Image (tube, rainbow over all chains, first blue to last red; front, side, top):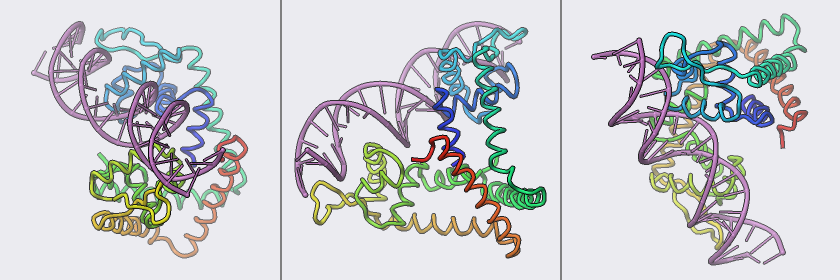
Length: 133
Length: 133
DNA sequence: TATTGTTATACTCTATAACTATA
DNA sequence: TATAGTTATAGAGTATAACAATA
């Protein structure tokens, strides 16, 4: 359901999930080389090339020259991209409040602790079955 | 993380997530026309054609004649497909036990109730923003 | 030599639209 | 007429491999 909600919010903004993910990471990190995005998105550099191409065409990011490494490009949010990422962040916060604001402090703590336990065991399971690299 | 785990388990069995999903639904329902799968997977009939083509090539399902409607085909698990779905179900149960067996009854009830509330509010959010159809 | 990002190619999943066969 | 499933076509996302430019 969270995935559906994100996909739908993205579509409303003219974004696919993968492009939104890239913008989100860019919003967290500021201008970075594509290699950094490839690592953050757990995707090959080739895939990043395609995503950045699309976002450049949408005027949401630009490829700027890296100040010291002429091989690399700095993927940078345009003003339009900045606005969009700010909107994403606001929506994110608003959804979090919608989902949790009605819980008491104690309820939230208990729930969060239970969830943390589940996540920890899931992480262990993934490590044991070779899913975490 | 759950998605990663499933994708990885699928890959180990030579399956993509979409094909696994179709097999899973088939395991729940028994032989069904493709139209039913399209609805279950929330996907167009055309997409089901492609997925069934691939699963037929892998000898996991067959297209059988519908007894009364000659337009339709009944997608049916082969013995190999049955075995694979049984394995999926075992893995599913095992993971559920891994994630929750260490909780007491009371802890689990509280956690489940908290989660149900979050899901309910998420559903409301989706309905309000037009995400549930 | 190693790294950054590209072009070339291919596969999976999905969609819309036009069509065939059947109901 | 309506429905089940297909072919035709297209787009997004991803991958590997070979390559260019630069470090």
